[in-house]
Image 1 (cartoon, rainbow, N blue to C red):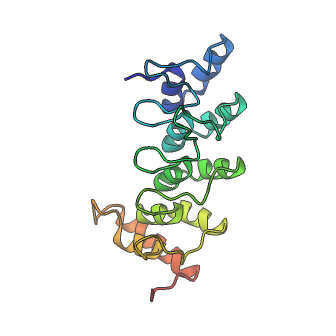
Image 2 (image 1 turned 180 degrees about the vertical axis):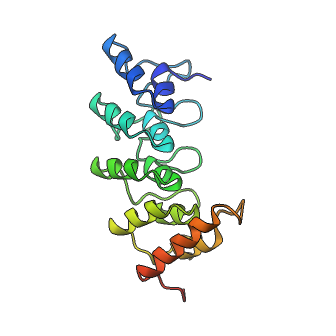
Length: 192
């Protein structure tokens, strides 16, 4: 699939493998068969930061940051870890979607773009609400995300929680109910 050992270890959360690769002078700038390096996207548009954020690997993110695979790294097309890959997701958006609060905390601490939007105009709070990620919703609200901010389709996070993902109305139903309560407790406008 064209992935380097560094990308694979980031994906699977193998910090010890990453440490070993670095200790034997593994070139973090090594290129795969498509010319992509550890700081860059591989064939389907993923960077180590995106992969580690998606799967909730905080220790991998910390390691990547320590070896200068930084959050501002650019691929050959000029895209960085703060930017969108194929479906418009950034590390912060992926961590919100999957409810990885520790990853959100880390990404915020390294000045990752917390205001990014996916290809449909959803921000972090809308994505976390849609998936019923109550802990992520709570974190995002406490860190300044507006409960009444509207996305492109004029919907708020409350709309996202009430509707859920378009592909499944039953998805994490109990969790989405908790999210609705959190949003309303934080003055989400139910009349919008």
